[in-house]
Image 1 (spheres, helix red, strand yellow):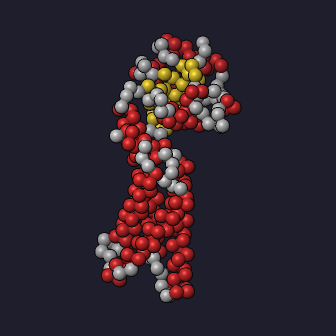
Image 2 (image 1 turned 120 degrees about the horizontal axis):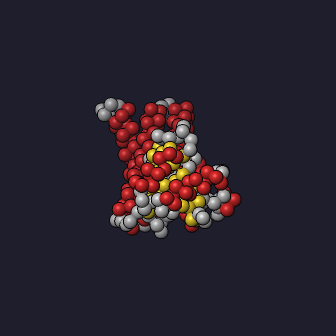
Image 3 (image 1 turned 135 degrees about the horizontal axis):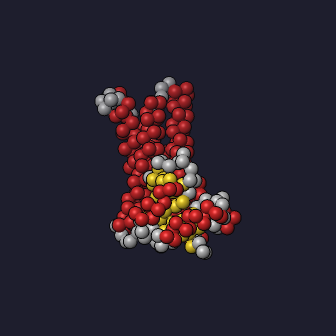
Amino acid sequence: MLRSIQNTPRIVILIIDMFIVTGSVILAYLLRFNFDIPEVELDPFPMVLGYIFLVRLLSFLIGRTYVGIIKYTSTEDVVRIFLVVLIGSLLFVLTNMVTYYVIMGMFFIPFSIIIIDFICTVLSLTAFRMVVKVAYMEMASASGERSEIIIFGAGKSGLITKRTMDKDTVTNYRVVAFVDDNPAKVGKKMEGVNIYAARKLPYLLEKYPLAQLIISPQRMSQSRKQEIIEQCLEHNTRVLNVPPVSQWINGELSSRQIRQVKI
């Protein structure tokens, strides 16, 4: 099952996307007319559906929304979907202008349908990818032993570190907690992971005795880093460090660059 998600062909993703497009149009009509579509709207519906389907298909092919690795869906993929769907919807608006002012004096697609369809399509395409991503991560976690990670630092570097560990296909890492010195961040969550106060670090090291700790901040005093390392040594916890940004490969952090701190 896990392998089937990993190797899902692009054409399958495109087909599923087109099913979502079709469902979004139908849902838009049902919502617009309170689940009682009038006869006058049902007659042109097949033509409207076919036109929307064709435009979406061409826009997906040109925008290549289906080529991303779905298990690694990112913000960039969501933005691409939003823009491609938006361009298609703007084309529907342009079509309405042409049919109203040039051809037959009426709108081809009701504007309310265009708006509802846009919202439904963007949300459905995004939700589909996120569900697959979460399902893959859950199955990956269940398929083998998980290496637990505690990240010290809940800033930008900590977030990048978490995403880097999540993408590691060799070792099954799972970030169980963030720890931060900033009291404004304590008690909140980042990508579903709790952020704890620094004073809670000994408690976390006892709760997760097999976990490794990664020090992520780019700017941290040597004395503060030493304090953290000493607490970890007391619990026999392995400490790793995120290298400076200047050492990242092409501006991106790799899990292989996160190495054990030399005591």
